[in-house]
Length: 298
Image 1 (tube, rainbow, N blue to C red):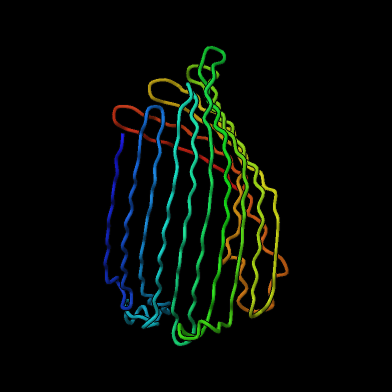
Image 2: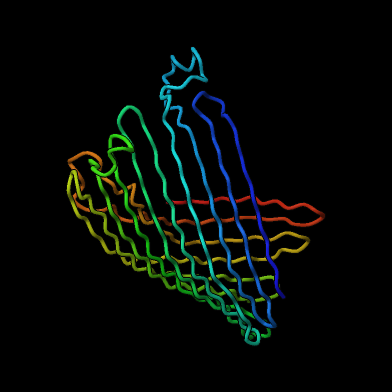
């Protein structure tokens, strides 16, 4: 009823090019308890990465020596940590679960002769969800419902060198909150026929402010929706066919919205939106599995 795991890894390589060394160390662990009808866990992960940056080469430089560097001394560092507290329990045929997670990332990069950037980002998230099972038409079906609540914080400073970071020529701060409700239903219309229907509605609030140069303060709010509908039909002898259609979205991150040189955009980027459909044929049996699919995405 009680257990733990611990994973440690380290990777070192000098890379193909000069000034292309890569160092990565990771530590991750889980402490887990499994009482009757439930589960609770504490997970953590720590990472430390150093990457030297060899820079871009022209075609002529590649022909002369593809392993050379155009930027000796440039490098980047990243340290990040995540801790997650979560659990689940069963009530009859139903399952209920939730995760609370915190992540912190600190990254720096040096571009000689006179550019240094120091960025810190953190994320707090809470994700409760439930899987509810019910019977209808002589079969068991399932509906999953949940919430995704996220709060991002972001701060980035740019200066000529690490020594002058206290007086940066750029200081950006950002905030983003996401509040989303989603549901997905798995419904069996017949022994070999399954429908999957899902939807998500999300409210996003964003702010990104440059406090030094060029000074600005941009904010945005978005109400976003996405859905997916799918049908899978078993054909027998290991064969099945499926069709699905849906929409999706992606919200721009802080770096995509950043303005380094004026003139700056007056507003933050709108979310990307996509519409997609797919048809496929699958086979699984005799230790083999394969799929052929056609899709259209816009």
